[in-house]
Image 1 (cartoon, helix red, strand yellow):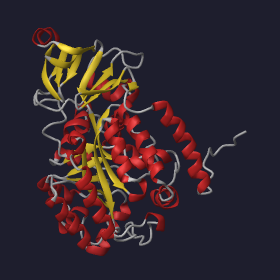
Image 2 (spheres, one colour):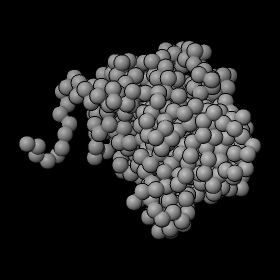
Image 3 (cartoon, helix red, strand yellow):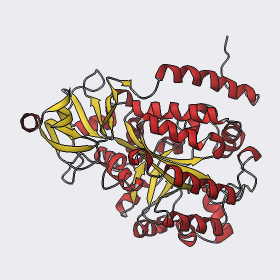
Image 4 (cartoon, one colour):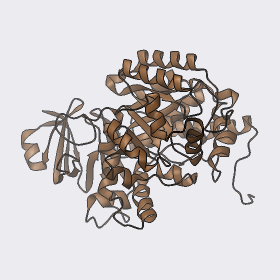
Length: 463
């Protein structure tokens, strides 16, 4: 007996043999995958309370976004076409520094809604400031049905690379307070919501923490058996700063501070030099590649094919509303595949299959749910998505994987199942009031701009 049976699908299992099953079926019992195989065989073996016909559709593991800013969805489009430092210091941080907890909560709802509707089932949030309302955001994630990492921001300096006062007063936090807050949120929320919510440490990038504070964070993460995520090597200034201040490469500095291990996710890694690849491989950390953000902010190209060749685990992330403008992992997969072909003048630099592995299996390893996520196999968690394969932009289908990566969009995701529960079906999200959120977000966006005296609009004349 199964609770849910998906039938007549093309099942992209992502298992060890990377099997694709035509006319495939997946049986779900509770929050686990119970069986996978051909539809006629499973229909003989399993009776189900709910059967979903997936004819002309793909079934694949839910996508995993390893670098998300939940609180930035509400400031989407606030700083387009600006370099990183003015983008951050003149727009993003002041706007977030004006947030109330209600606005942080609303931004999280919007972000979760967009992620669900584009097939992301698990995410890693990287820098939750206390003013956003950590408790309220955790409740949003719990109610949404998503699986997510919530990382509390930690800092004891106000710098960003070589700019010592980059963090404005409204966003400044002290080390002792942020550590106490993080430990309290671990106590309250780590492994809650049926283990759908994990709480990690989110230290600010070098310049925002002392060596001693990084070491304290590393020790506390080991003590509480949880993860760490940090921006690293996003812009060239990061490398210059670490060379000047410590005479070290990024990963040499991370190892010096103890911020290494399979429980660490380094966001971006654009300027991580080749000499650091061996440290990454040896310590089993993950680099999260964010191609849209890196291209939009002209940060550069992370050496992703080279890292993968060196044995580094590389996952994929969308980053935030101001740096990417969307949280659509299907679009992010295409951009990742194309960017490196152009950079290396090699059409095989990053294959569609490799990019899908980054968005599923590699992301699963990064989140520490690795043995239970990332593939469709009996005994793993039932986090699955169903993607339409019919439509003018999707047919004919020759290779379902490359068709997904190169032709599809997040809007082609039809159904989302997380922890064995149907979160979206026929594009209708069951856990979040989409119409209500969209209305409130538009009003809140205008309110934030007015509060800061910002006039953000087209560069062209508006009549």
